[in-house]
Image 1: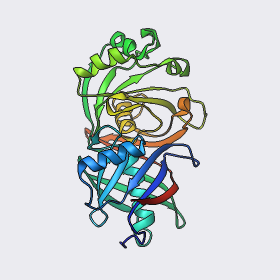
Image 2: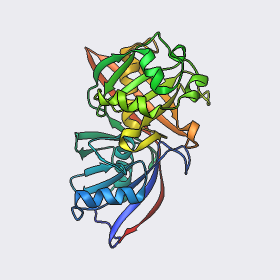
Image 3: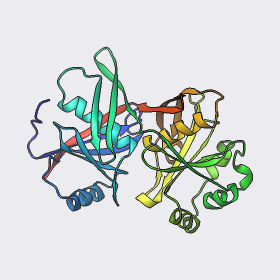
Length: 296
């Protein structure tokens, strides 16, 4: 590893899960060392006003903290992948294929894939999934402002966590998915009594035939009404798909589109399988550097 040559506090803006610049999910990565207090990090994250801002408090130990404009998170997908990309590109010597980030939730292994010497994909391994309780379709339909008949009742609505608990809701098609609009009052009542504060809805119909599923993700509790790409919740989704035999097999390798409804098209790559009662989940995608600068 080498020290940054930029004077002051360097920061980078990247698009994560992006096939092209100005798509995917934006992320600001601040190489802060230990100079900021938690309160200062929170204020900077609010100033950045991205869905998340990460602070690398130690480049040498790959120690990272993640903040939304409202709260600090123990784990989140696109900040983990985006931060690993920045550290590999800006601070590492040579072509490395693995590293480990130290987050509040614990250590997260990162995998880098190359074409020649060019980094093409960044992947992260998820924690073992925890499968929580089930939810009645009529209850969730009210929260989503859709008809109960819009839910694909072949599969149950379930809370799943590979780091951040998420309620996974299977819908029938894009028509139903497009109609989703969170009822704030009923959402607040729901999450008051649940560990999961976020909701992911998905369907097998896609805008691009190259993709396998379309996803929308809602996390108003964390200050993110709708996220254009979320690696943490898609890790929960990958485990859910295998558990419920959604594709009829114990191993999946799929492309997921997200953010199409809000103009930030994103592509996430999911791999999951179950062996001997254990689940193995990885989520990956492309990251693009948009800008770099200095905080004063």
